Length: 500
Image (cartoon, rainbow, N blue to C red; front, side, top):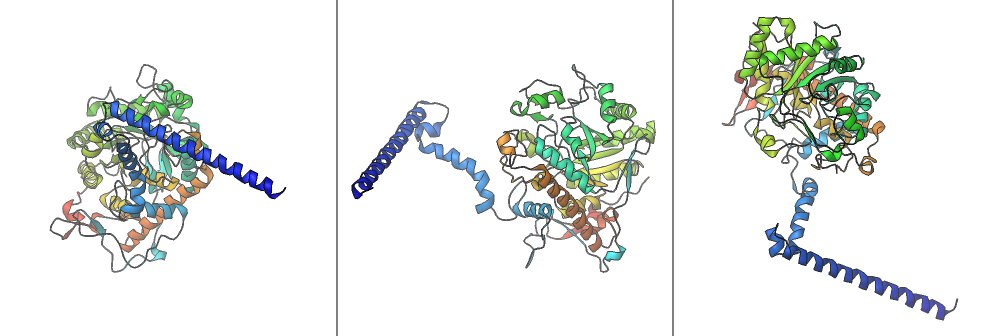
């Protein structure tokens, strides 16, 4: 091809680029014009009406700020609900990489409420350390549950989280030797695929064990209990982030399978009642616990956020009157700063008692009525790092449960999209394109590593305090910073109540 041909092709290419540039610029001007007219004529937004087109960037930047704030602007210890330091530890633990840090702590020990532990002058040597002791839950049922696990997976429903996420959690839980709570959305095949021990949660709508018109279906209860992987049943009274409000699963997430498992219509919002309609008193609650236990022959407990704690006093008095066999086999105490996929901000920000106050309170009430050994206590709600879990054992917990910690182990980046079916990590969405990057096999390894490293580092804290394993921790092993800048032993703030 001669120079004339090359010049002709070059000229044609430049002309195409010119036309393309003119088209793009023209289309841009047209879009701006359309947005300008739209903004000027609409009446919903004052800013867009007064500053057409330009005001749109405000909403864009406000939305993008949720993603960029944690990377560029926030300090390691200042974000909510979880700061970068907390998340980073979970990520490292889940990836099973070095979790040591250099130079010094970035944690400020001065704010009131800060908790730290008192080291023993003669820490427990490695050869003197002990594996976590076995704990048996449900001594009066046909099929009690015995486990050594310290740190377990809290309730996350299939529907609120995706199929790959449920699979990864189940496989990881089995590998780590911990249990997995189904959440209130019923028992799916994906919970069972991994072979984990399962705690079946019964929410106020009784998804998975309900009659079409509402209320328990005893046959469905027995059917669930017949599965050997289902070890316990948990009746949910209230959840940390939304006490006084039932579970909320937006209709956008309710596909055919979720609808079938829950017993609702496809695309319908799955909104549970704010309480069990048939439970109007402590008598009714104890009756429900015993009905489920008699029907399933497996341990039964309940989950609640502590608010009006006089309820626990009345409940314990009733148990003593009826007999110790009637007591719940366990109680899960959730915190007011617990998590959720969707809840009104008025409840998230204002309702319920934080775990730091409620856990020792409940433990003491159980001791007061001689029920502490009979009723096992699980602590739940924002306990994702070893120090927080170790505090719970100091306060008297038998187990610690976490949901959001395991979400971070799955790869959650705290994008705050849980309620929109747009989770970028595929954990809380049913969009197949977004689920593509979440591979259950590799994420299961991270789930197991996170649980194992949590158990290991809780043990390190216990050994530093001079006890052989975490369940031997006592309140005098922790101190709490007061408003005057001085710390007080937790044993002084919450004196150990002797068993009656």
